[in-house]
Length: 312
Image 1 (spheres, one colour):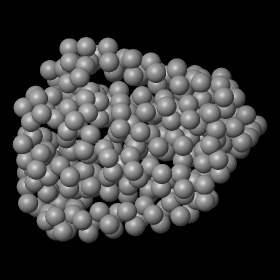
Image 2 (image 1 turned 90 degrees about the vertical axis):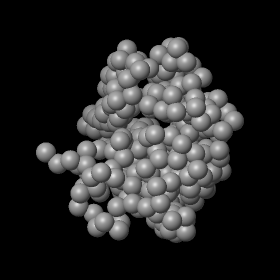
Image 3 (image 1 turned 90 degrees about the horizontal axis):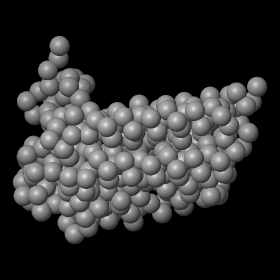
């Protein structure tokens, strides 16, 4: 079995190609973009795909636009990497004081500040190239998210629920898929966006359990610290809102029974996560956090299947 190199970060995928096969000089930049932690771009991508599938359903199409799906994939990888790079630039001093983050490329000196800034620009240019492939309304919608993205790294310094701001940014794709199809937004897209925000707050609260002790020492605020001993109840509330808003989105988009079956399976997965939360188990929290990819793919598959069945 492959083992991660010594400089691999503790929450990286074991034996990832970025830590084994990439040229040595490139590896710190790949880590800066979190390439060896693909769950991040999956979680950014999934609301895009949900939205694209829901829009295809509302438009009477047999499946989500494959080109849009590919563009969202490339864009999610690029912009997640850019967001992480920007976050690490802003947090480079804080990261030296947290056990899980002190070996990141910037605080550990593997990448210089100038190198990180240049890499940030490069990733943003890739994201821009993807965004310009959509209609004018979708392009404007994409640009509208930049202010929220810019604010997020600063929120944990003074706001007890920075995960809400992360949700506003990470769930933006729930608007983009619809905008790419209709060149407009609707209540269905807004409801899907609100449900996606609640989902992000829930899963990132679970993720934040890994750092809760260090965050208390450093003074970083998080929803995990805010909920405290009631973190399971807090995550459950987020996930209930997720299911309710998504059900509203499906109703507004005139989704059929297969979509609602998928939503039921998605909700059951979220309930399973809540039941497994343990504030003292950081490794378990990471596994639960990563499992949201599978939950999201179940929902996307159900929406796509609904499109196909309805077109027959």
